[in-house]
Image (tube, rainbow, N blue to C red; front, top):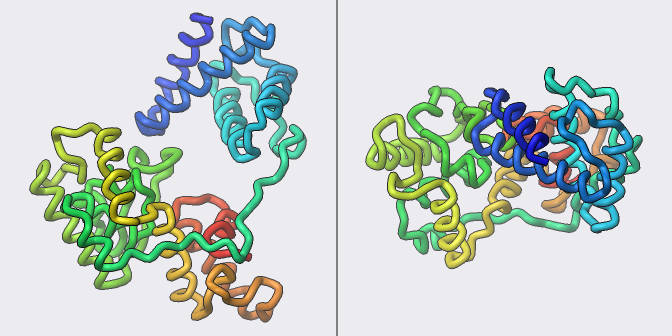
Length: 295
């Protein structure tokens, strides 16, 4: 077991493109897979020994544990990453399509399941921590994830016409750019820059020096809960607002026309808008936008 963990640690350590947090989470997950395989009767000292039967055994075990399809897909994604590394080189053991592994398709939210949350002045007034308030405004104006809004270094991110998010701040280590289009966005970014500079200079983030990221996240969760703010719902609101800006239509989740109800010309406009929104939110596929916008 120690051999497996040692191998995983070294393989993950060599992935310099991913953030520290991503590498740490991946190493922990892949080590757990080794432990699970051992419990299932397989003794592997190195990931090079992985075969398709091991992957299928893990999937079967996760199904027995009633893990959600999204969780299983996330785990398979990490296994795909592992077997694609040069020191493992076992890509062929995992089919490219999850359906071939017997994993059901992801279930997206229905059009009538609305999660959008609009931050009002009263919500912000309830937040006494100015750094947290700045992070929330960045979430509102740019559709950032919580982690991104806390880790961002505003002075580095401000590129004039767009906001550049570095890989180490983003989920999955995927950097991206978000256009700066409105006065409200500029105001939120300038406020964040001012506060970040007061905390740690122009190279600093919005996390106080005396707190770790995890400690500050707990502080964020406590403050937003007390203020009645639903963090992820802010991204939904951003996506729906952008949809209206780009298409001049309400999205299906906001009571607008569904895809089938749109004209051919409207569908062309909507497809471009959905791709843009998915990109701004940090998702690689248009279909993920269904969660935020409906279909």
